[in-house]
Image (cartoon, rainbow, N blue to C red; front, top):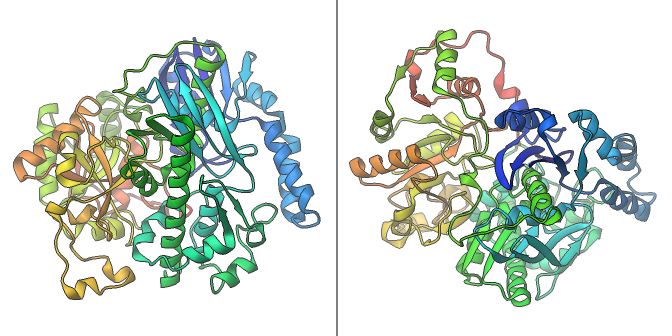
Length: 605
């Protein structure tokens, strides 16, 4: 039995194919269209999923869409009516699209897919909860889903047991932790639904000077983690911006202009809203533990991508184990919707062993054979060196040790926003210059942005204060004290972005200014070649940690195909590119002819 899951029309559209309860394929539409956070109907992602099983839409038994369009339209219409006459511009922009297209989702899906079978519409947070529980390693567990907004729900919690999820409680729009965080994303000059991770990365450079103002003026926070927002400071219900003049007066001036210089106020705002977010999530998690009595927790929803907050929940010891859906945002709703239909609607059984999850390392996207890649390279006249499988780990380890930056393109593309060793850019974490080189010459992005470490699973606790696995790069942990470098008195007095280039540990390229790191643990059974390469690097150079950042430049989706990878390689200062078994060196390549002004091709986030 084959179920096609779809999420679309807000951000990060995606498709997922589940066959007999197993996730066969999943991908975001952005990877194919090259439009970051593409919200359009995921026609290319659907086509890929169907190709993966070798059938057309005729082979699909059921389709699952990740939310209820009529219920969502009810929320939008009621919100506008409650605020009349405010919001007329936003109303005139949004409502015609809904009346013409969005509320007729069943008919739209049938038309787009040429499909006449049954279509299921779980609620948005049911899809999130399903994506959190059903792929998890637990037979029974609590779950917590937190995002901007679905239909009416912004937060939900409950219990997953065997093949069912049960929601115990919810918070409703407009009181939303995701939208609160996005308001500060907007106010500090970053793009909403895209730049929230930048705000998180900026936070350690600031001071929490606005925490009291946020909790006094903006958020009425209760002990159980529930809260109400003071909507007098926000414009997102009916306006075209997230915040208003009252918000500006509270924080001393207008929003930062995108791409302008970051100020200390921006850093302090980032630190303050991050601390408030962590406190809210901690209280929510504590309440979930109390109400459910469960020892384990699963997380999903866009706020579950806040890996700093996730790390705090784990360290606080509220739960024995935490599992986070790798595609926690709306893309994962496609996966959750399909699994919800299989287990909850069709009542199919589920058996977990408390050890291994069902996400398959989240390597669920397209792969390309050696023959396909050789054909592409030879057809384009691209020079390369072919390596045998057993030659790759040592060759790449030696290149990293020589401070080369390497594009790494192997196997199936990752599902979710993190590169996990399939579409990655890698380098030597020991290099004190690598963070600056990668940010400014490879990624063309802000210098403050940290890079993540990939570390052998069995060595993680030697380098980080973490004993749990973190295969999906969704936990931040402190760097171990044994490898930290003590700061001089002068270095300790540095403030804001002055802190950036100070060496803090034996792996400075992945150690953030607060001695933290967003950790990916790597197991051989999940990604054998990536594991063996890091293992060889440790054997030869004494370090089981390398840099892993996504294979893209700023504003570009992660690369999907060999052609995307080659173009990104040629447009940046990467030194080498490994496409499966084929190693390309930059100095051997002919410059691209008549290349577009590619820095303007992608909309900056």
